[in-house]
Length: 483
Ligand code: CS2
Image 1 (cartoon, helix red, strand yellow):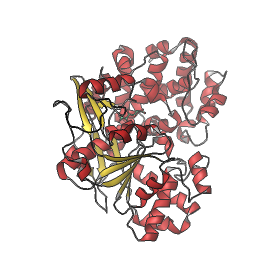
Image 2: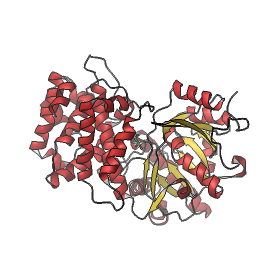
Image 3: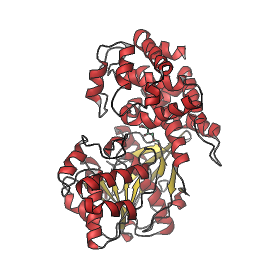
């Protein structure tokens, strides 16, 4: 029997503490992927049970047809499996009111974006989904969705185009703007998205640019919950625990964290009832998470994948890699300003425990994707600070070298893999059949990627080259042992 309601679901499965159909939608979410379903939708589900309100979610996939195809026949319901070292528990989430795919459901999506009831638009489209030129903070004109939407602003397909179009339509109709809530792992994500939208508007709909700059709220957020892509095994566990077939089930860890700037002029759900923390400045939390969790994740994904570890828990079970993860965490922590109420050593210990969770099948290959979008905030920004403070650079040089090794697109036994990076072709051209020194020189010269203080630091570049040389000539294992 397919999951379409919660009647008859076994008592050990937690069900929504509210009647879903009794609550209208107040949020449009762009990017209806596993992370949203494990994070914001779960917080909203708890908030609805706690404080009610018309805050259900209209979920939209910009490109994929699958999420809506899975959720629509299930009335938006899905199983969230929470896996901790102690075991697994299942929860059915009822906060998704509608699920759309932009292509076929275009009219409904545009209607939801302009509806007065929509007071928040939240977004998880991954780092590469936005089309931000990180060196200017404006639009990346070669990004396919940006290029399309600049040409046809009345027929938008990307985040910036859709939001600017909708904010313009609302303004013209006298409807207050929605709050824009970026939930991707980008530094200063609210400010970054604001800059993108204002620049896009200046180019495509100049009459609305000032309104966006002055009247729209873009609170920044730090989001955290390790959520592997769902597999057949996920669906099988969900079916076993709930007694229902569920094509939309996902699995995640028990831990979750959400730190948000409390700037929602048109209201928000009571997310604090689910443990969200509201603060006036998210930046220190965001830097801690990006540099420690995500930085260590990227390092261990590249080194671990090449060393033959399929899952993050395999990396953590390897004593040499485990030590390097801890080394990376403390090097990253050393670059952070003090944060009241947070002990970075304890945070690092908690991360080691989370990464080691044997029940979470989180693939190193999944984390390895989109390196050119991830390295700047995860590895390069802390390396710049470490350099300025005279702190050891070896951990960052090792992480950069491991990424460079990974960009070659071949395992140590010669098996080719797709990089899954938006700059994949450029990377292939710059690295094919070259020596370690040339690869380093070429990759640090990738336009808009490497901070110039690092490209000018010959000692740092030498540290990267030496490590990459060992990886290429003697293999990752030898490079790991040499650290
Ligand atoms: C990971 C993140 O895939 C990746 O790049 O580092 O998705 C990470 O699991 C989340 O940010 C955890 O909150």
